[in-house]
Image 1: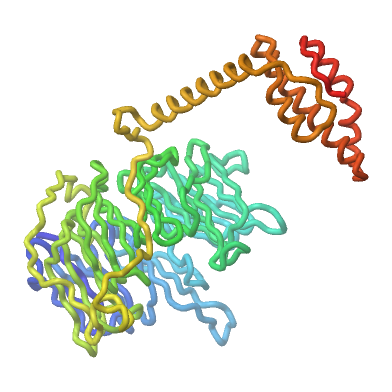
Image 2: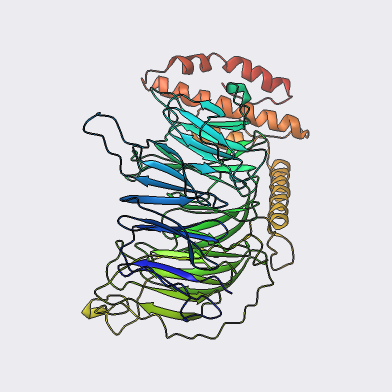
Length: 587
């Protein structure tokens, strides 16, 4: 059975079947109560949601309840990768009698429903503990230290990593060996830095596998690749002298100790960074609009340039065979789908007012949705094929809202990579309709309607492969043609110099400086030795400059100290010129 689409809105939680049975109702009975949040575990075998006063977890194979908890005001929830632990976070509160904080981060065993441990977590930012994929270790950031637990035993802290004023951390999901990165912001002129450690070797600064320091950083976002061998760090400042929106830098760090700044060929912000699920490539969308998108390898070298266009996000399908470049938010919802192996554009589509985008686990279908509170008008979802065919479009009633939409997760390897078929799927839905009351198209003033625009707002750059040598009309590569032109120009210049030196007569003595002296230097006789002629030309240029200084001094100009020193070298320069066998008159 194909993974269903799970929806959460003002009507509660409900499911619809995904491709190929798009549109049919699921066997899930649904939840009619108001739901604050919902979550799947990594393999999709557990689904949990919270209402105003309950938390419910079901088995998605049978849709039977695994357990139910009477706990209210849950704001966030999350499963551990294998679904063995359910984490819930509530708003922080203080006991009025004891004046002590109440524990608001709770961890439950999903098999028994028993409480494993409760912690105090005041801020919602970075509220959730992070696990490795095998649940071997779990990590929390608590007051300038990272606390590690092993095998979901939260009664004992196995290891601590002390980093003064650490504000962010990122635990690689793979392993063993396990690796973790910590970020410490700079203070009082000191740079910020990120250090990478291998668990549990945290014995001082020398124990770090890699380290990268940088300035201009108020916040960072860290992303590991799927293999845990490379880390991307996006540093940002709130404002800067050059840009009201701040500066950004993208840094690459390898567990082998390598670190560098990822090169970008266009100025502007970094909108999105995305790793390929294969872990060997990553895509960066950056630059002032129209934005560029570039694919890099594990050496931070550009593999392919997708040109420019109206985009600000990038998504890989779960198999890593398709890359979607999209423009959401204040952009019109353009979608570009690329074959990552062939570096070929598959199709383009448009999904306006999209707030949620997610690939189906099969890698060939995807979901776009318009949800509240980002947009409260025209809520609904659409299911597409990667060739641009719209398979289903569903809008919720005008007085209701859609808050969340996501595919059910599946175990890794359920949908292996397949050869892409570019043949468009049969569209089962009409073209994307505009929102009610909104006219489609671009606004044009009355005097310009009915005529073709006389200018282009943007000139888009075409895609290119920086590593491929582009052939010219003669069949040569660009680099070979360029080198040939340089050689030909050098030969022609040498030929002209030899002809002019051989044909020019010996100059007569000239007593005055100025333009005549320049002509004298350019028409000087040749010794027949190219090295001596080159040296003689340099000496004549220096003597010519001295004559100009003498003229300025005679006119009453005050010379600098270095210019006076240059005048004293005139005699030695004339002697060197005479030693070459050239008797020029520089008196």
